[in-house]
Every structure is written in C-alpha cells, then in structure tokens.
Amino acid sequence: MEQEMLEKMIREALLSMTGEKKDCEVAATINTEMVKTTVKDYPLSKNKADIIKSSTGKSLNDFTVDNVMNGSITPEDIRIAPETLEMQAQVAESDGRKPFAQNLRRAAELIAVPDNRILEIYDKLRPYRSTKDELIEIANELEVKYNAKVNAALVREAATLYEKRDRLKR
Image (cartoon, rainbow, N blue to C red; front, side):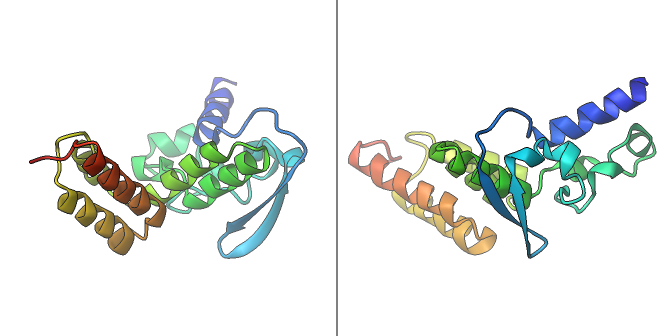
C-alpha cells in the first residue's frame, strides 16, 4: 500500500494538475495530434494518463518505485514536457489567468535550455550585470539556438528598460 501511495504522489508531483477549474475546454497538441481536453478530465494524471508524457517520452505508468530503484527512471525523465505545460497554459488562459498562462509558456520554452545556461542568463539579467549588447546577444541565442521566442522578447524588453533606467553595466 505504501508503494502505491508513493507512486501516486510521484505522478501528482510531476503533473501538478489538480485543483478546481471552471467548465472550459482546452485543446492541446500532443505528439502532433490534437487532443481535446476539458476540466472534466482533471486531474489529468488520473483521467488522461495515456496522453501525458515526460520530456523523454516516458508515460505516467512508467513512474513506479521499482523503476526508480532499478534506474529505469532517471532525473532527466522527471522533467515535464513542453506539451504538458502548454496544456496547463491553455487551462489557465481559459480561466482568465493570462499572466500565469504566459509564465507556463515561457517555462515550456526553457525546457530546451540547459539548467546551467538558465542560471547564467538569470545572473546576466540582474541590474548592472550586462551591457545592452550582451542582453541582445542572449536574446538572439534564446531565439535562434533554442527557439525560445517568448523568452527572447522578455530579455529584449529588459535590455530596453535597463537602458532607460540606467541599470546596464558600464
């Protein structure tokens, strides 16, 4: 019984998709096909487990204590897939929570960026840490190398604001 509870907790932690929502419909692209999801399908970990995959393609049923213990599940497998974040963004947006939806979309883009690079960019985004050219270079990298267009626009906006507010490195 303890193992079942632990497995359930792992699945729920991976998805973080519980909670009450208004009756709305959400369309999400999973593996290039349209899957229509509504709030009656929530929690997805229970009702739509067959369409939820990790960023490495593992299904929720793969997340068991045995698979963790025998090494079949690795830390890379625990990362959320961009498609799942997009589904969450669409739910948030349909519930009138547009800023939260935008944050989820930025997060979905950043899955492709290595963790150490995200930390470097975060440091460079602090006031007085970068020149405008350095920030523009980061924005270009995000857009071209990682196809992170929303995040690139955010970095460009920061560069413009830092310039106006005299917060750039000299």
